[in-house]
Structure formats: structure tokens, C-alpha cells
Image (cartoon, rainbow, N blue to C red):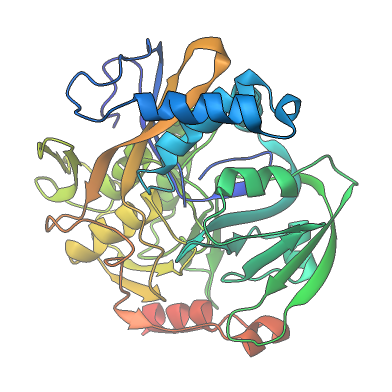
Length: 406
């Protein structure tokens, strides 16, 4: 099921910038637009006196003591970044040509280099939303909810651009980055040396668990692949296999899932929801609302379902969990999700620069906007504590397995 796709564009909801060269992400939800935009004339509908800008420009050019330190191009890009930052939306960002090239390269392929941690915002601070399973970050002790305090010699400041922080952390495999973090709930920060690695991240896997192996565990790491079509094909393979095995119980693990294609979340949720039900809605800047409803013939209807979520579940993963929860399909278990319900359009600009602009709000089936103040609240709240983490205990999974077998 593809939506919003008349020009080959797809709505792409990515929560976290992944600190590998994999930038799916609290941050990027995307509706790709490959067309270029001409710069608009300032002041068409504004009464602002723009001469102030040129006054400051000329003053800095004439009087700043190290005027040769900053090129004219850097000043232009800095002014544009300031304009975009004034909207106070961490998901709306301007990227220079170099940053755009790096971002585009980071979304190609399935093999990534870096530490494997997804970053987000918490009241302006940079936090780790989740470390990826099997990543150098997780092996080094990085945990979900960690505050990032410094990278090498750089002290992270409140309000720092998350993209720039990602740039400081990522790097080639076998190189070392020093990161200081404050674990959630602790008072003393810890300094970690992490050797970057090559990371392979499958979008989803299925296994069969329980004493009788009669529970399908579908672990969805993200709602993206190299294309929406590839993701949908992978989902089709798993859904068809689960249907063929005739299992009646399904655990869907969305913990640490930063999101991805909105269309993918709709497509997968439709397999669990009977026809004519609302899966999600999108609202544009003019208040126009588009409704996405389920179709007939879902392959995974009438199953016992539990969806596992945590504060690393965001964007498209929240759309999926919210669709099942609001339609009374099974239960959601874990902790509150991240709360990221916007989509961005990625627009190419002249000279190789680009801009990510928030263009849509994502709404739950009941019409509520999914955001930081209104995340998905589980039906069953179970938290994995720091002690559980250190002991290798997963209480959320254990409780979900127990519930579905009862």
C-alpha cells in the first residue's frame, strides 16, 4: 500500500539520526522531493525592514578582527541556518552541499560505519534514543536515555544541532571516538572510548519462541530499506510465512525502532486490521486531513498480538503501534514511546544544498496528534531498569511472552 506517491515521493518518518553513516531518523520524517526550488524574494508579505541584515553583514565585514577567517559562502550558509533554526523545529534543518552529500551517502546500502546509536532531543539536550543491537555503542555500555555531554574535545551544548553532533560522532570503521555520557537516573557521567565499526542492520526478522515455538516474534528494527518496495517485499515474506505456519500468537517488537516510511507502517498495520478501520491520518499546514483506512484481506487477522515499545520507538513505529492499539488489536506493552509525529520534505536547493521542512502532522486513528506530549502509552507498563540491563534481563519480553501464553 503506497500513499502520497503521485510524484514518486514517499512520506518518510525517521525518528533518530543514526550515528553510523545511516541517518534514518528524532528527527527526520521525509517526503522526498527531488525537484529544486528557486530562492524566494524576501518580504513579499512581510513588513520587516531587511536593511538591518545588511547593516550587520557590512559591520562584521568591516570591523571583525579576523574577517578573513569566515568566507562569504560560510556567512551565507550561517545566515540561512539561523533563519531555519528560528522556527525552533529540530526536524526542520538546512544542510550545506557538503552536509547534503554526506547525508545522501549515509542512506545508501545496508552496511554502515559508525558506533550504531540513534540520537534525539530531550528538552534541547542531545540524548541517545537507542543503541542498535550488536553495535559498538551497545557493547561499550551506551544506553537508551543517555545524555551526550561531549564528543572528543567538544562539549555538547543545549540546543546544538543534532546533525552536527552526528557528524562529530560518525567516522570510518576501526577509528576511535571518545564520548562522555550521563546515564539516565545516575549522577556521575562516564567517559567511553568506542571503536567505530561496520554495522549491518536488517530491517526485520522473524523467529518462533515459547516452549512450543508457537509464538511468532516479529522484530522490526526500522520501517525502511533501500526503498519502500524492498521493505514491503521483506514484510510480505514474513507475513506470508507466519500465515502459512498457522500460528495464533504474535509478538511485534518495535523497541528502539526509529521509524521510517509512513507508507510502510500503514502497509504492515493493514495486515492486522479488518477492512474499513482508520489506521492513521495526516494533516497539512492548512488543516486539511487525509485519512488512511484498512483494506480487506489482511493476512494476520484474528491473532493474539502484543506490541513491545519503549522510548526509542518513534515515528512510523508509533503509527503502527497506535493503529493496533486504537483499533483494539491486542495490547501494547513496555514504556511510553518517543512521540514523533511529523513528516519532512527533503528539497534540493541550488549549489547542492538541501533543506528538510516539516510539512505534515501524523495523527492517530482518534485524530490526536502524535507528539512529545502525546506519545503512545502502553496498556501494560513494564520498564527494564539499569540493573536489568547490567544483568542481561529483558523483563518486557518475558512479561509479553507470559501474557500472550495466558
